Image 1 (cartoon, rainbow, N blue to C red):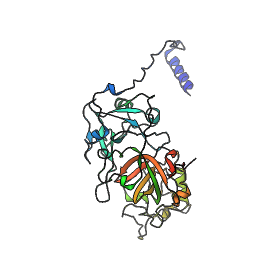
Image 2: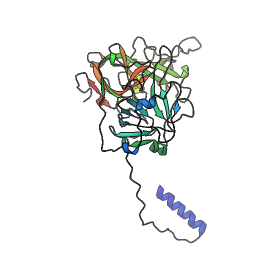
Image 3: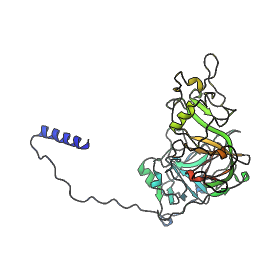
Image 4: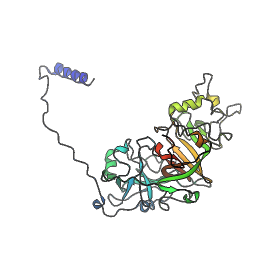
Length: 386
């Protein structure tokens, strides 16, 4: 196709300009080689702040634009990879004081920022904000993160996205100096920081890679479906919560996988397992004119295609228990392992597991995000998946 376009253009030039040379001279010289990437080390900077020191500048509800260029530098080892697809356009680094999400805004980050590689962040000009905070008795802390200012005001930070901005703020250390982060071990509920108050400032577990041991399946999920994602995502008429609040008889809503690809979501919905779940959220459930609730089943249609529910990949939060504390394992519907079945001996409670991932808070609840299937083992260390 490219050749056809070139020839067409040549014919047009010939027709409009008369007899000319058919081809222009071919460049036979040598282009300049691009400058090699310069890797950084501590000697390239003055004071290097800890992650906790930078996070201490944040006050809940007040995102802050950090100072002038080059004044605030943090460094840490990369603790995540987006190669299996469970992290999206961001990665975490951590030091001895905790970890923090860097909202880089591009895919394929594992090619540039290797697990265990040192990365320096020039924080000045970036926005320090929080995602996932909720006030009130049923809320709690979210995660302090570094990103760009969000002009829409919808979030406290947004992605960097521009390659120039990314490369001027995210500075890579020696790629041959790889020391993968050793996860911190949590074996008791008493080891968990308080979701009402803890941040990277007060606990070095927050934002860090951890292994939580001996957790038991909690027989509960949370999934948010949309009837139409192009419409208001906060409208009760456009949402379905798959959770204990919508299906008290079976808080798992029949979901036995870590997440759902589009094809798996269609398989679940066509099975009818969600038919009794009401459209709505919280305590707001819309009804038809006759007063009956709008349910997933009522949207099935005579052809059974459930055309009223958007078919898409969905993240799933699977609940586990450490003592009496909930541990939420949240997995993306776009991860390579989203449709893997949780083993039956785990679902039944016959066996407990260890999980390794990034420790985060969402509205005060503990959430763990794993890098890959290798992060799941039985409590004796045997891999969950071989």
